Length: 361
Length: 185
Image (cartoon, rainbow over all chains, first blue to last red; front, side):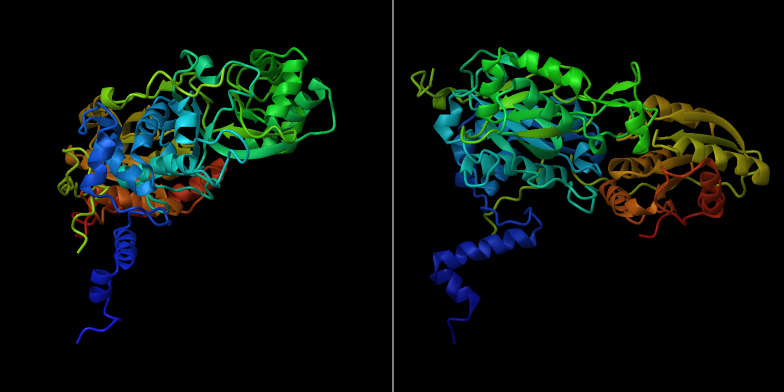
């Protein structure tokens, strides 16, 4: 006799129950990052693949030492599972390519004890088209495109490369929000050119820039009108000894809130000026490093160690709401903080966005 | 019931499972044999292998003929390095797998040496057993045995390294000489 408690019966009768069972099935296969995934079907896959002209069998990433290569098709499957809409897929592919173009991802990063997280920065009108948040609460959560594009990358690493925590992935503690940091740059409130222009592309081109990071830490400074005072506050956080491994140099970048960006620009600072100032002031004395057990590993000039690799290697991005003078320092993983190259988003000829777009000048 | 859900782990063709690596034939004893050392650049790895080399020379009459440092901590030794090791050594010691990716990569080195006919002993720190084992499985050889030393290795003094090498020595010798110990399938 069939009863309501019989799972076969209820699943057949109730679509919601079927969906829940399908999600459970995906958990049982070990395919999820701990959160529910959207089960991928052939119909969805075709819709995703239709957004790009790339061959579904194109290999877009490899971990040769693990004998694993991932394809466009596999990226689409994992993007579906992450909760993406089909029109996000070109951005997922650009984000993946941007990451693969970074030297820091090619040295065992996905397996590293430091457990680094992609920081993916989106420029261009695609932000408005897909609702990629670049304003208040930019680091999330609450915005589907931001949340799911980052998650798609994480699922592709897990399912495509087979790199899972406590197995081939050996993160000691990991990074909060490891697969969630997709942010739009707030080009409309930034006083400077878009990051993608620094990254070599034309203004108005949809683009993704990527780096791997180990942490974000806030700088809250709402009590001064002095650009140099604000810069000094950033330099203090950037030079933090804990983020320094004891040799060569540390790394750092800034996601400036629009208010801090305005304070600096109003005082006449270009982005390059900001980078130069921070490079010169993010320092420690050799004695301070030695007191923390990290002496003797970096070039010293007059007893002082520059904690940043170079001015150009301090990425400066503008994002967030213009409602408080708060910014974020982030910590690139590895020795090259950002390649300085942004990757354009490529669309299928049939689905290329119209040139008439809601671009804010 | 859910056969229509697409498996997200299926990648490019050619990623099919690899066959099991058969271990190289072991020598009956080590006296007079040529030893190759494959260093993975991890802190204290070179010192560790140097201590092992000294102990094997003193107690087993092994002559170290070649020391090579891998160009990448993540990737297995490149083919030309493998050729050198094959040409100039009878047995090889690999180490020290002491991080997320390099422990796995040390196991891959061990397996490619075995496949090339050279008995190898791979040393990993015990904190990274899981990733080393996962690599052995990925390479089609689950159960591949290697020598473990207590984590951490990077913070040890030279005396500490020497002590660890001493402790690991019996296992290294046994792994290089005993037949069929290294695989339990």
